[in-house]
Image (cartoon, rainbow, N blue to C red; front, side):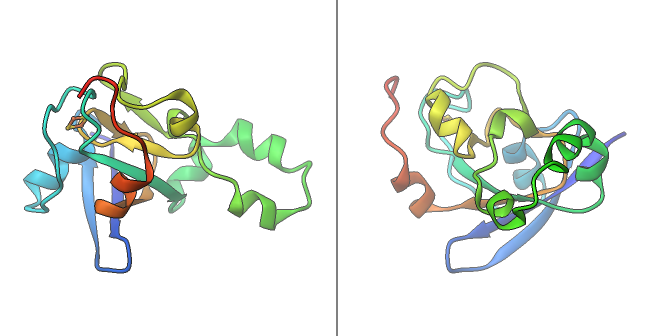
Length: 140
Ligand code: FES
């Protein structure tokens, strides 16, 4: 079964790498590993579990990004590539629509960990500062 290594990074604090199976969400994998993350609804409506995609990790990303890698080859400005937010929709599969996030928040890398399964190894910022950076859910 396919799985991905996800490193959870608390802002200014520790980090922890967990293995997320293909049929798991990040929150489920964290709980299985004994890592505490905030959550409430587990349905993508309250925004309590929000994290932010920081970077793609490992060789798995290359395998998954052939199309993007080809288009990126036309760009010589690597610094711009690393500074650009990663769109969560490109790197996670949602079990249901992430209603608590706007499309632009998702494009900035915000991801609802209770309903999201990663498609690649990656690093995700978690914790209260990430939650504070996004607005309140319209559904909560
Ligand atoms: S726990 Fe409510 S949106 Fe994830």
